[in-house]
Length: 294
Image 1: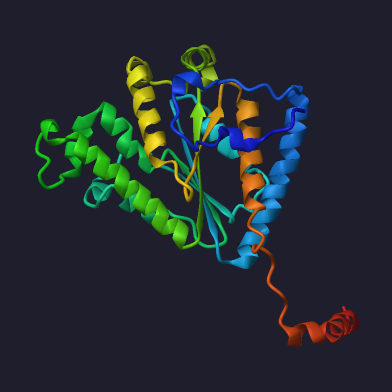
Image 2 (image 1 turned 180 degrees about the vertical axis):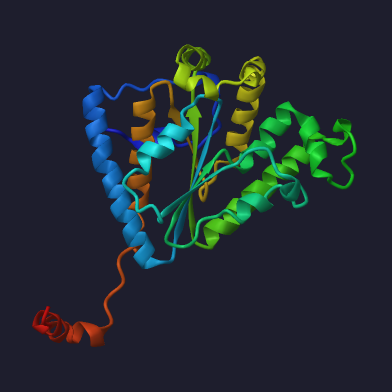
């Protein structure tokens, strides 16, 4: 298998999405990729156990991508070997009535992972500068003072929202949340093929919505606003990684590899030392247990 430098997927300068490939050749068979994936997701699960014992950090993983980009299956495969209590997944849909009575970041803030745990946002706070850019009328549902019509939503409004998102991420990073943001970069042709498979396979029909085709017609607009959001919010504390997503197995492996390669840099994350008084008497405790009668 090709040696991976995961930093090549990290956004550290301005990017043009049209110039970034949606395919990546690992130079390995499908079976080899799956075998490597099994090993690395076990390593991730073990690392989360240590993270829990350490108790000072949490990990937030943000997944964005167009419809059919493979977010759900990626979550299932990457975190399969985690303690089920060690990872919490939130799939953010259209805001509820209650959520709309708060600012747009509120529902994301209260869903942040506890120290010692991983949190996965399947679609994220970035929907508020993506879907709402393409459909600015959605902003009116937020009932923001001074925003009465879409003509009130200026470029300054969006710049302020990007600033708020950067501040939000900096705040949680400074308080112990390790942030990863992955954009699953899918080609338009691959999306077409995946939508066709949803129609061709009866057990996948439920995933299809005519609305998918309406949004697909807005592909270029979405790509424009994804690019802008990524360029304006990829920071040291909360970097974006653009993952080629035309092949699902490859995308899953690249995400898992990136996570583990970055997380093991946190050398302070280790199991706490046993209390000296307890450690001193371990042999005694062992003998007590051995001497118990059944």
